[in-house]
Amino acid sequence: MFGRYSLDKEGLVFAGGVWDTSKYKIFPVDKDNIIPICDDEYFDDDITGLFVKFIETVYGRDTLEENLCFVADALGGQGTPKDIIREYFVSDKGFYADHCNMYTVTGAGKRPIYWLFDSGKKNGFKALVYMHRYQPDTIARMRTDYVHEQQSRYRTAITDLENRIVDATTSERVRLNKQLSKLHDQSEEIRKYEEKIHHLADQYIAIDLDDGVKVNYAKFQDVLAKIK
Image: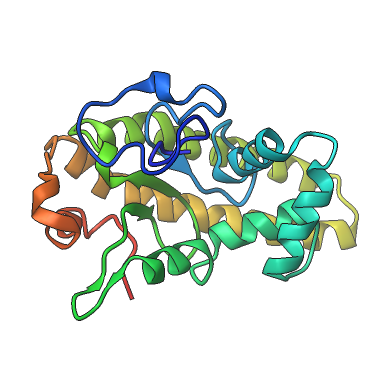
């Protein structure tokens, strides 16, 4: 998805240097190096949707559902295969925890190469960025193309739920109010997060890959997930 590897070539394809989009023909790489992680289908390049496209590209459409079931069974959990896979990406104990554990240097701690921009416990906003493709304008693009878009979607969803609650039955109203409360929490969380993102976006911070993960990660610690 990020271009570190490619279905077109063997081995490591990109870990810094000159970027070449032509190396990703079979499965196109994410264009802006920002992949949102959402608890619903808010974006076209949401990580769950991209994962499904990847499985379909590699193994074929005919066996897609079978393969998604295989992955979901391995992960465990409740719901449809896509729901289980989505929860794995969203959960604090899921994908990112596994990624950080995978990229652990003995005696030096965890050094993730994919960075999780995370607004907090309410999952108001999450997105991954590949460290080796980071550019000084990455956070500015994240703010305008994703954070602001997500805020707009929350406002629309809240208005829609409020309208539906008016004519809902008693039992349905309980369910909708629960959803509404969650959306309000996420909307407030992302509002506070946008302020932090805005501050960093205006700085157009550059990184030097030679400085390593620890030094560069610290530059964005206020908006990144804490490495445990």
